[in-house]
Length: 411
Image 1 (cartoon, rainbow, N blue to C red):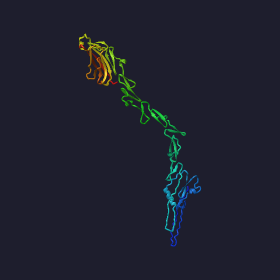
Image 2 (tube, helix red, strand yellow):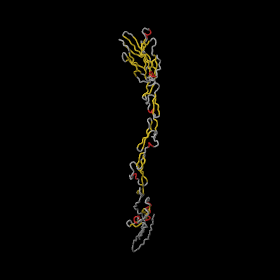
Image 3 (cartoon, rainbow, N blue to C red):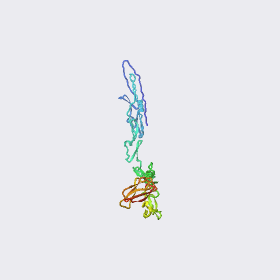
Image 4 (cartoon, rainbow, N blue to C red):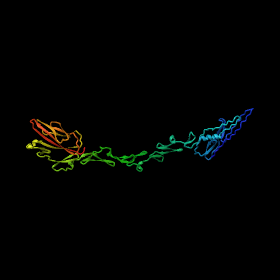
């Protein structure tokens, strides 16, 4: 490498004055590497790389420098400091002017326009600095659409997008589902990615990988008719004693009178919502005698019967707990029609708390109305009386003894 740096030698001669004549003598001298520019009236740099044949040997490149030149490897980067360059130019290109008139010394940097040579992948900046070319930003790359461009100093690299791997010159999808388990239950591969799925009854946790049980019982209070039991990945509905699960969620009454009848032979089984009861087949009490199923008659030949209802009919019914009110629950109707008679209906007993109301619907019938909701389990006995009066002021009555069994639940 050759570096030629020379300094200005200036000679300033004193001004000689003559009374007869005034002669001006001017000459200049530039240091090595500079020459006089008569147009600009100052020294300018000589470009040795242009005028010196084979200035650099051995594959080196010639780079002109203020007052000389440099031989550098072709891959070398050159950074030019403009301030230092101006200083060097000023120092190397100083003019010397000799006049007979007072001394006038002119000096200043040549301010040359100097192009530097940058290595491949670099370009000259406005500050005469070799800066990296971002091929990814300028589009000066040859990466395919399925690749990502990554800028490097002086170059760039094409790499596969996330979720893909290079095989030869191609980027192929990585099947994450074949790798060590990413997902708790099921993995679904997609181009460049994947996602996890959970089995029914589970849901993805916040990490999108783990599956956690869904508490179906906590999502709704109406999912089961009676009670919900959460299990891993599922749930089940259970019913109270006397009921069975129907359709997975609904509780239906079990008719124990058909399945496990435990009543004696002289008893009849009556099923109600949630259980059963055993009642005597002959409910009649003295002086009443049984004339047909559930019907007891007091004989007119018995003087005691003159002050008692002529007949008592025993009936049984079951209702659910907390039934909506008002609600029609039972109809009473005369079975025998007498001419020229008037029938009236009333609740004779069993309505001390005012839970019922008897509404006459015709001359021969009336409807029992529940006006206060009943909660079970409980048994409620109501006597409904029909009083018959004819035109001869003959009076008779009959009673329907209604046993109402209120179930323990509203289903």
